[in-house]
Image (cartoon, rainbow, N blue to C red; front, side):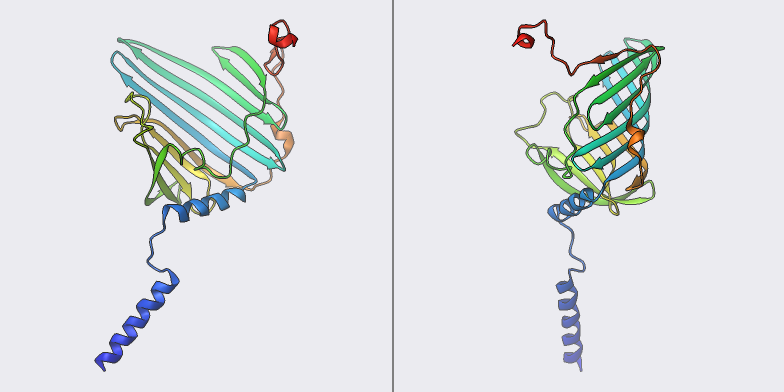
Amino acid sequence: MKRGLMTAGAAIVLVLGGTGVGRAESVEDVQKKIVEKNKAIKSMSARLKQVTQMDMAGFKSTATADGSYEYLVDGDKMYVRSDTKMMSETDVGGNKAKQESSSIGVCDGHFYYTLTDQAGEKMATKSKLPDKPDSDPFKSLRDDYDLKLLPDETIDGKTCWVFEATPKASKAAPNPAAGGKMRQYFQKDTGAMAKNIVYTGEGKPMSTTTYSDIQVNKSIGKDHFKFTPPPGVKVMDTTQADLSSPAGKQ
C-alpha cells in the first residue's frame, strides 16, 4: 500500500514537472513574451508622469512633467502625440526658483513638430521623424546591461513583470550622478511599459516615469496627429539644409 502511494506521488511530480508547473520564468522567456505582445500593439494611449531629481553639492532640482501620450502604427508609419505640463524647482546655493512650461510633440507620419510655451513665449519647430520604436524594448540594453528578472509588482492595478538592468562592469558610468541601474515594469496582459526608474550610480532614484490608464489598440483617428501652430507662431523648419553653408551649396 505504501509503495502504491509513493508511486502515485512520483507520478504527480512527473506530471507537474512535465507541464512546467512551478518552473520559474527565465529572463529570456519573459523577454520573448513582451516582444510578442509589443508586436501586437497598434495603438496606445496613457497618462504620463515623469519626476527627475538631482542633488549635488550646492545644487538641487526637481522637475515634474505631467500629461498624456498616444501613438498609432499604420504600416511603416508612426503617429505620436504628447501633451505635457512641466514644473521645475531649483535651489542653487540657497537661491530658489520655480519655472512652469508646457510642450506638445506631434509625429504626423511625415515630420515631427514641437510646440513649447515658457512664460507665455511660444516656439514651434519642425524636424525629421525619429526612428520608429522597436518592438523589442530590450534591444538597446543587452550590449551595455546585465538583465535580471525581479518579483512581480502591481502598477495601476495591473500585474507587471519587473526587470533590473545593471551596467556591465566595462560600461559602468564613472560619474555617480550619471546614472546606474534601471528598473522597468511591463504589464503582463499587454506587454506595455508601465514604469521606468533610472538610478544614480549611488543607487538613488534620478528619474521615474510612470504610465497610467494605459489603453491598448483602441481606435485613434489620424487627424488626431495633425499639428496646427497657434496664430502668430512661426514654425522653425530644421529639416532644410542651410544653403548658405559650404555643405548646403554642394
